[in-house]
Amino acid sequence: MQKDIKERKRGSVAVVGGGVAGMSAACALAGAGWRVKLVERRGYLGGRASSYAHPVGESIDNCQHVLFGCCTNLRGFYERIGVAGKIHWTREMVMIEPGGRRSTLGPGLLPAPLHGMTRMIAAHAFTWSDKLALARAMRAMMKADAMVEHGESLAGWLRRHKQTEGAINRFWRLVIASALNAELDEISVPYAAKVIRELFLNSAEAGAMGMSRVPLSELYAPVPELLHARGGEVLLNTNVEAAEWDNAQARWRVQTRTGGIEVDFLILALPFEATQQLIAKLPHVDGAADLHEKAKSMVHWPICSVHLWFDRNITELDHAVLLDREIHWMYNQSKLRAGSGGRYLELVVSATRSFAALPRQEGIALAIKELAEFFPLVKEAKLEKVALIKEVRATFGVQPGIDALRPEPVSPWPNLYLAGDWVQTGWPSTMESAARSGHLAAEALSGGKFLVDDLKPRGLMRLL
Image 1 (cartoon, rainbow, N blue to C red):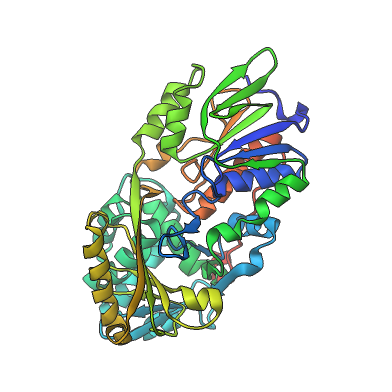
Image 2 (cartoon, rainbow, N blue to C red):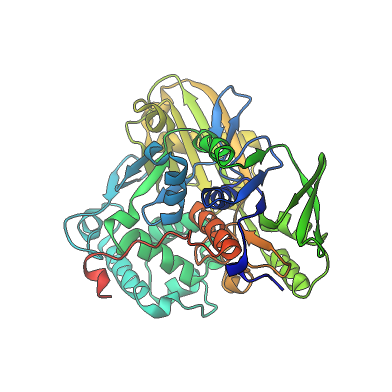
């Protein structure tokens, strides 16, 4: 049985996994006086949201990661490590059709949930039939029933709510399915409703989009110093192979390739595959087999990104949604990181296994060909460098019934807790879910308060 958290003294904790979940748990506990060791098998922090030196001679992110105003725990983590000022924020979403015609979504002067209506009505990307269909759907998403799991996929829900082809292809498939990184028939309706409410209905602040001005690993640079200043440390290039519970001493012994680590508490902040492999080596306890099967039943979806360096500026936009083509998003990294220019662009393809299966040269050629349909200057520019990144395990699937597979942070083992975006947080596979899971694990371990409250709905949404 786990000891009463009210009786616990601040002891030693090993957090296994240096992604956002592990870093948020480690920094929260260290700030509360716990002695923390953050253990990461790679030579850098960040997990699936990291950057590294690519052979093309550039430091690039493994994929563009964004946050939103509603991501209160991720923002809280950034504030804790002192990097909140390194995020570029925008409240506009520019949608571009092949040929270059643009539509801009974003808040106007009306109160929530009507704040985005003015620009939606003016958007060329949608017909009047599309706009009416989207209005009906968003109204339905506001109802409490949309947040309850009925086993229906988003594709079925959209058919039932008579969504037009334009609304499905240019909004639901591109914006919502892209945000959840899954096909429409693989998405649980409550998670789609969560995205709709937070990004488009609750408030203009909640829907603001943020992008890092620096490579992601640089964003996490203060973490080792913060932990060291509070008596902790970061152990990179340290692979955890097993863990043993000493019942007599009430301590964990974590075995790595370079030795052992003895701690009072253990947090596994790993993706579900890695968690599954590690818990299979832990002592047998009631509930272990069930947790193992849950982790085994989950699936991952890929995200691909194409990084292009041209000899001239291609666009003045800092980002854009690209309609009706295989590539979905454009991020102007030159402008985001340097404040000007459009020579270095990153293109993102999400929610598709077909692009991930393409050979490297075919994928790059397709991306460049489609990019030129939106930005004609591509045809005149010389491509200086290119990189294609396939993150095959980018996110976990949010298919109907997924909540039954997501575990709570308290594990079947004594003094062992779980974190990771796949743990039950109420959020889909995002950096916010990872940060929340880290804070939830820290709370379960210590009895303290670390979870940051959600943003309150504004305007008329306060009444709804």
